[in-house]
Image (tube, rainbow, N blue to C red; front, side):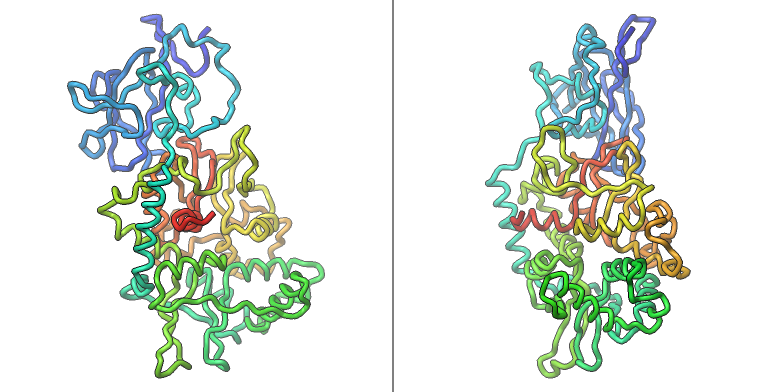
Length: 491
């Protein structure tokens, strides 16, 4: 009887070891070619949900093997794995233990590895146990970033962000939506949904200035208020209840919660077009907001401010990626895989000290639980997983605006509605306005930081869920805020 996860070739009496090969660096058509294929090209298939990751499983006999990849017709090798120069060029190598090394007693229950896993194989346990380097040692984890390389990278990014202005964030064309504070909350709810946005600045005609912002968080609080048994706010009152009245009530509640008693108004966080990108990023991070308006106040007429743009970390990251696109070598940290640097929130491994927990929920959880978690955990999204912790979807703060569709919010019960049901109400409002319609944006722990930054700089993408290739088991989550806190040297 042979150990599990192995094939047996009866014609040769040899145990064949299923070995997963992964190419995580993109391409349109990818093949693997190796000594075990007679150097013929075997096709690799893209991983479901990760179109830039290709994989295949080959049954290999114990012994020494060489291989390389063919990506869009170009021979490539995986630089994060051991490689040598041979008579056919640079190739990766793999040395599988002898057949006698595989005994049933060696197949142990699944224990999450304590260190970073290989970028070639992120979820095949047998392969992780049997791969050996040419000197007979275990595979080395990814190297950690040196303090020198980290400081060099941070310094160069800091110089760029300090010498470039918010003007560079302004698109050549586009529109910015602002709401009148005297607009009924119900109407504002529908506008945000119809326009596919989750935040809008508020304009007060009586004061002649922008006085705040209405965001998806406001509607989460309103939905909770509507669902409260002791609430004074009814669905009918939303017809006449203005944004201004809601903001006053919210300020009073915040004052009560903070023990101050009086209403506490939160000032509008804004930036000017002459502010540096560094100043804009710090305002976003320090105030815990996702977006801030760029407002220009002409000196000759300060009473008529001009709303130019809504700035976000995504836009700033896009500027950084564009500026350093052809000089990545000048930023050593960008070459590192994300699992080798202190960035993001990760599922703790066995034996690791307690860290900030990763908020995840099952699709059967109530919508009320999801909204409470979004507020209490102070996160903008929650991965939704199955019983194996494999990613199914993501529920975000901005998804609350989809409940304005067909006035769903008027008859929904937050306790009885499951997350699965709530996700069905979503009609992907971003797709109408040129944003990507993909819901779950994912990456692998082996992805280099610059690849992660490029994906996060895409419109509509605010976080990436870190998953295992193939199984899509959630390993962590990395957000725009995580990237900037790391790059600017924050915790």
